[in-house]
Length: 230
Image (cartoon, rainbow, N blue to C red; front, side, top):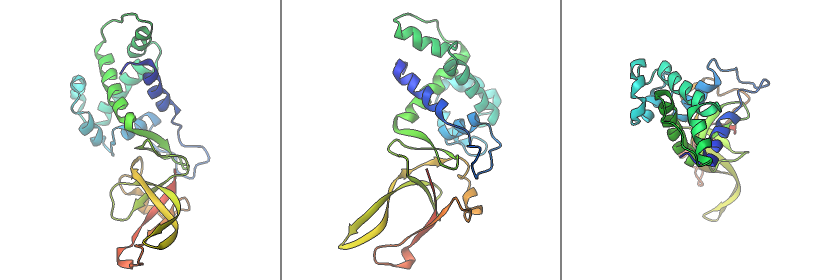
């Protein structure tokens, strides 16, 4: 966990996520960037209930229980410890990583540093298989590591989870050619649309209407939704 290369790759990923671009058509979020990141990493929706569920198994976080698990105050305290001890070169976890790389011993962690280390372990486990991404409109999300520039986020009517899709070009299915096929890469979390906000704004220019039909053209089995560029 405290391998310097891995540690700094995690910190670099988090620090590389930009805020909404100034020319974005999307209204700037009311939440600070760090809270969007924290909610995205824990799939926290609204009141951070996702964070409560995903972090409940980590005993070092019990010392913050008085703030109310799943509350913004609780997640704020976790992130403050994480930022102070992992982002700051003077932080205990940051210093521990440097000392370990030099073959030197470090002192036992303080309570806050233990909280930071615990959240770092959680984030590391998440970013082994997933990666953070930002859409062209400034939305921040979490998706399988195999996503790449040019992919799209699709929200299908009737589904409660967005999906990353990729243009597949022409494909052949049962002796029939299709010109605009899409490959489903996998599910994702996209902060700001997980409560169905997109369906109130789906006619906006940034969303392309999407309609899939079975190869035999059966309208009853068509799948509709919206998508936007990653």
